[in-house]
Image (tube, rainbow, N blue to C red; front, side, top):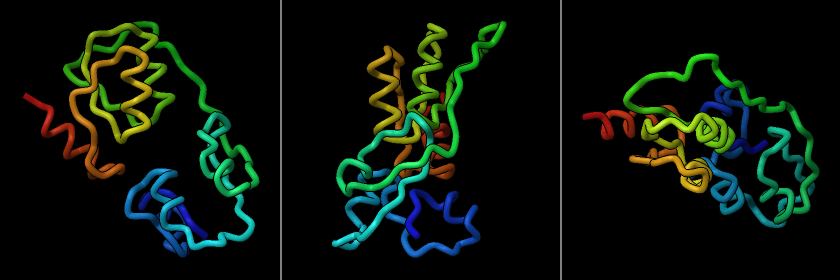
Length: 138
């Protein structure tokens, strides 16, 4: 079994064969042995289909992301975006609060939606996000 990210590996009790050094679909694709055999990609309903397209993988949606619009817009100095769907939902609020992003796909989604990203996590995990928030804080 291969997973994207340390947190997912820990959720599986560490019983995984591959956790790529770069926690993205691209990172996993680069490290998967070839031929990869039959692959099942399990993820969000609206997840990118890079692994599906590149490996001819089967896909199963495990969850659906739903956008929630707060009654009162949040206040703050910095927003943390941990997914592209979070970036899109945040952009819909039209707030001027700058963002820190967990990784390149989230950064791209945020910027495309007009969100100002001031820092991107060096590693695409909680540690990387914390480091990026600290670096972006005044």
